[in-house]
Image (cartoon, rainbow, N blue to C red):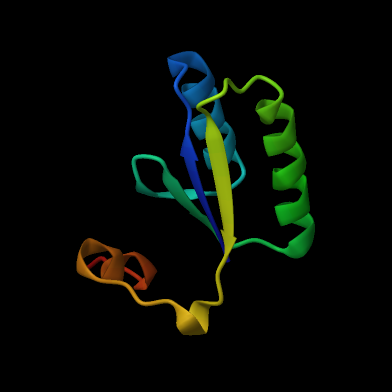
Amino acid sequence: MLVVSYDIEDDKLRTRFSKMLTKQGAIRLQLSVYELNNTNRMAENLKLKIERFAKHFGGADSVIIFDVNRENLIKYGNAIHRDKEIVYF
C-alpha cells in the first residue's frame, strides 16, 4: 500500500494532481493525503506520472510517497471504517 501526501501551492496544478491520483485508483484520506492499494507495476506508473508533475513544481511544492505495510498500520477515528465493507439491505 502507498500513501501519497502532497503540498502544492498552485490551485490548478494541485487540482490536476488530485484528479490524477483519483484516476489511478487512489482514495482520499484527508485533503492532501491519498491511499493506493495497487500492484508494483501500477505503483511504478504512478511514480512516473508524479515525476512529470514535479517538473512544474515551485520551490515550496512537495510530494512524499510512503510505502506502508498494512500489518503495521494503525488507524483511529473515521479512518477505521474505510477498510470495512458496507452491507446494504
